[in-house]
Amino acid sequence: EVQLVESGGGLVQAGGSLRLSCAASGFTFDDYYIGWFRQAPGKEREVIACISPGVGHTYYADSVKGRFTISSENAKNTVYLQMNRLKPDDTAVYYCAATLSLLATLEYEYPYWGQGTQVTVSS
Image 1 (spheres, helix red, strand yellow):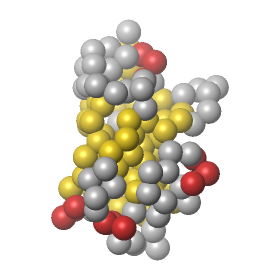
Image 2: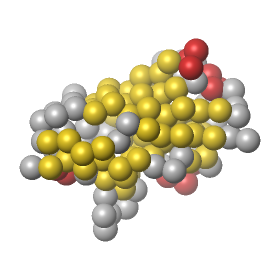
Image 3: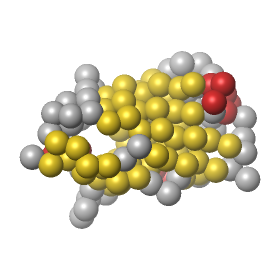
Image 4: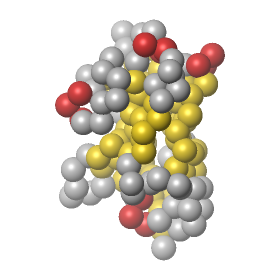
């Protein structure tokens, strides 16, 4: 059974940092493309960063480029999202998702999802 479990969310002041983790199980980690998405209240879910643990390819949305870093620790089947210089606009529920489609950035391309973790950035 494919499982993705996010952790690391919380409340932080603007300008602060958080590191999210996505622990994966039930599939061959190196074969999949892992994405971080977020959904703010009243807004659609959007992709923010993706990584191929097997190849090392990464993708960032313009809104987080230069502030967020995605990485993987393959021995632990875990993907991280280091978030620096956080802004109130970063407040959202953050989800990790997995797909066999390399370079996928659209929500419908990801069949497997975690339950999400709340990130709240206060001004």
